[in-house]
Image (cartoon, rainbow, N blue to C red; front, side, top):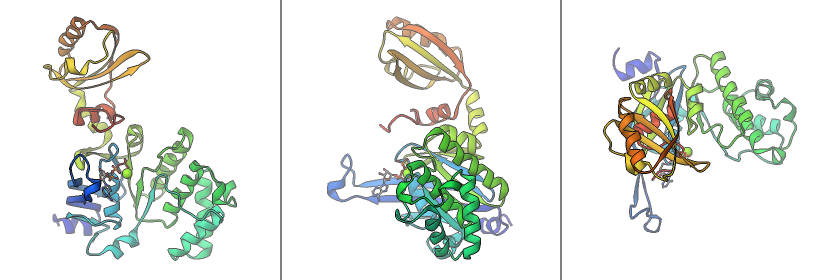
Length: 341
Ligand SMILES: Nc1ncnc2c1ncn2[C@@H]1O[C@H](COP(=O)(O)OP(=O)(O)OP(=O)(O)O)[C@@H](O)[C@H]1O
Ligand SMILES: [Mg+2]
């Protein structure tokens, strides 16, 4: 069976979208730059396989949450279609919901007056998990995220990192076939973020038939965690492949980092030059740091002479292995960490 329904029934595909589009219509007084329509998703086509840890990587406003919300049946698409666990999200949302759970980073869920365990237990009851089984899972999951000693702490008294770990536990508690994690490590310290990433990875190793779709705007998170990554910007998927492949595609190009003194802007000087594929810059300790993607190494000579002619002094020059950040830069024309223009 080569058809889509065939492949879904055969159990290859957990999530699929076809030309999925979402437009937000704004009220007159909400208009942005004179526009009253925001194209949050622009004909998105995606397939996520069962057992996959799939990442959606993109800057603020790229459309990540919009996509997750549609898949979780919390938001309707404007056009196009989406299927989750074989069910159409618009035609059969109840069936979709049976198979999924969702956690958003930074959400303040839970009842502050109840303890961590009471909150999680209550949530498990909503999902009809037998009480004893719920207690077993709660204890197990809390200890896996290093919060076993917090079971009796009131949610009021949790730090934001602990609260986020509790939310993550809530996501896994129902043992969903497909779990949507929207920015699971948003704003967390390095150690807490690592605990959560290790936990997510281990959970999938222990449950190889489960599927996780996560969003992030942390490059290294997508790189380290995800089997495949879709790069999304302004509602469009620009690339979709395993991180290593994305980086390999860039290896034909050469990535240089230069530090120059004496000028404040290299972008205007170098943009559009032959061999210059993309460029990003920022000031760093009084020097201008320039990330440069060249389609051929030879272009470096003319780049350096143009910089020199403009009065710049080269302080440092390094050739780099491409990172996902460079992949993003070459696709989008700016770095992920930069604000959308
Ligand atoms: N309810 C809404 N009404 C109007 N515009 C919206 C609404 N929700 C999202 N948008 C707009 O749609 C676009 C995509 O937003 P979305 O929240 O999906 O981005 P995101 O990739 O999740 O960003 P972030 O990294 O900041 O969470 C943005 O321009 C956003 O302002
Ligand atoms: Mg978001």
